[in-house]
Structures are given as structure tokens and as C-alpha cells.
Amino acid sequence: QVQLVESGGGLVQAGGSLRLSCAASGRTFSIIVMSWFRQAPGKEREFVATISRGDGGTYYADSVKGRFTISSDNAKNTVYLQMNSLKPEDTAVYYCAASTRISNVLRQNDYSYWGQGTQVTVSS
Image (cartoon, rainbow, N blue to C red; front, side, top):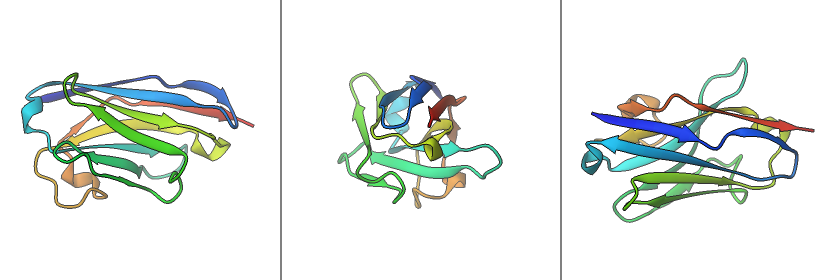
């Protein structure tokens, strides 16, 4: 089993920055991909960014490309999401997810482990 705990959410003005963290514990050696998803009020949860624990490769949703950066510290079993130039439409609950056998990073069903989520609110 793997446990994921997110932190770093909060309230920020448009144009500001936040850094989210996701700390993994348990059988972390089995994780091959970690990602961030988000769910805005009244909307479905959507993919934000992903990072491969093997080669560090990353991939972003078009809506955040150039503004958000995903990174990882494998020694600390922690993944980060640096969010810059935040917009009101970035307001959502952000979830960290981990997969041990992923085939499609965009597919939520491929992730076995999820954090509890952290709220990000961007005011205009």
C-alpha cells in the first residue's frame, strides 16, 4: 500500500504563486508515475501534470503548460507542483495520484492511490 498526503493549498490572488507538495509513504518503491489532478466545483476531475519516477519525464495539460511545473525528490518520496501566474479558473481541489502499473497517464482508473486533496482558491 501507498499513502499520499498533499499540502500547500490556500488562497492566493490572481497572478500569484503556490507550491503543492505530495508526500508518499509505504511501498513507494513500486510507484512508477505520480501525477496531479484537479476538480473544480461542478466539474469533473481533470488531469494537470505527471512525472515519471524513472527518467523524470513530464507532461502537462495544455491549460497549465508554461505556468505549472511538476518535480520530484525521490529521496524524500515527494512530488511538487509549482503553480505560477495563477488564474481564477485554477481554483479547484488538487489531488495527488500514484500508479504502479500505468499505461495511460491521463486515465484516472490507472492510478491505484490518491491523496485526500488540497484546496486551491484563486481570487480575481
